[in-house]
Amino acid sequence: MIVPIIIVVLCIIFLFILMLMGSGKKQMGTKEEGTMVSAQDFINVRDIVGHVLYTKDDYCMSYIRLQPPMSSLWSRRDKRMRTNTLTAEASKDQKPWKLTAVSRPMDITQLINQYQQLRDETEDPVRKKILKQEMSNLQGKVGGGEAVERQFYIQIWEPCKEHVEEELLERARQVAAIYESIGVVCQVLKKPDIIRLCNLVHNPAYINTEDTSSEPAFTMLTVEDAKKEEAIV
Image (cartoon, one colour):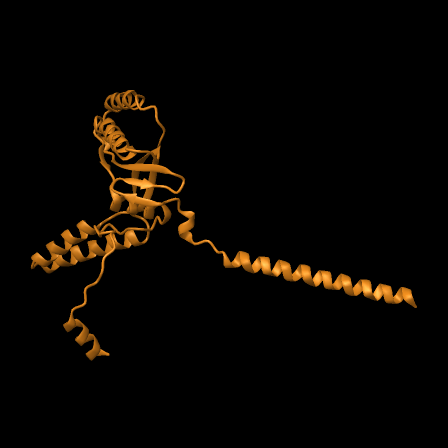
């Protein structure tokens, strides 16, 4: 009679332990679900000031945009000469750097505006129709991903320390001078362009090229505007 009672008691204790273990795992899962990480936490960017991007692991980075010329117009001898010049000059910089190529939809804003102006100025219906069709074709190619351009950037970096911003700017100018010596147009990126580059890297479909300010702004509401809002409500 005692043995069955002991077995029942042991079974009850075992079931109770299993219940405790299950509730503990559920609470741990709830805590893990509650500490979800945002997308911003995956981006190693602490701040961007001027021409410098500060990372969370205490590095400072600068970026140079390259606009290569039409190398297809160069002769084979000219290409060899420019390549040798670039190799000799670039070998003087012994610090690490990285070249990044980003594909993005071609920016046709200026071309569309030019076609729009020509269409508004002309009185010829045939020319208006041709310009309208050309604008439609360009927008269709960009929207369909057929018109894609490659943009090239050089990234340089240094550990965060005192006066590192001046060192990065000087090095960026030296690297830009190396490429400009063979006919490549270079530009050291500032804050709006660095933000645009980050968007290009993380979102290749990003095409916004407006010169918008990245600084926080406050909307001013006058008394007359407030009265108008109240009247509308």
